[in-house]
Amino acid sequence: MLDANVTEMIRLVGSCNFLLFFGNIFFNKGADRLVQIWKENQNRIGNNLLIIAGRIREEYAEYTELVKEVIREAKIP
Image 1 (cartoon, rainbow, N blue to C red):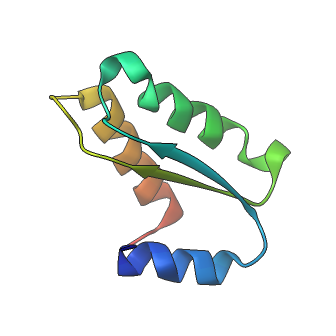
Image 2 (image 1 turned 120 degrees about the horizontal axis):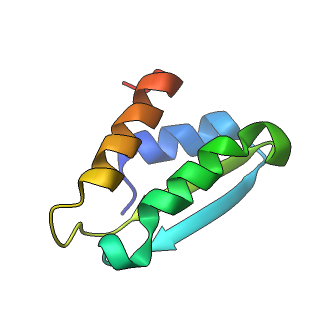
């Protein structure tokens, strides 16, 4: 079941491409690099929604700090 916030974001975005990263989230999988590349290329790639779903398997400060930064910049509650 999708989180209510994700469902609302999908409704607001409307027609767009969805990028899905699904599975255990840990350093070797590079989710932090994925978020950084997505963030840096938003103006070029246009209307895309990055969805990362999974359990953070260990302390992954690079990922959690980057996600917090993206949320702050996007003004997501």
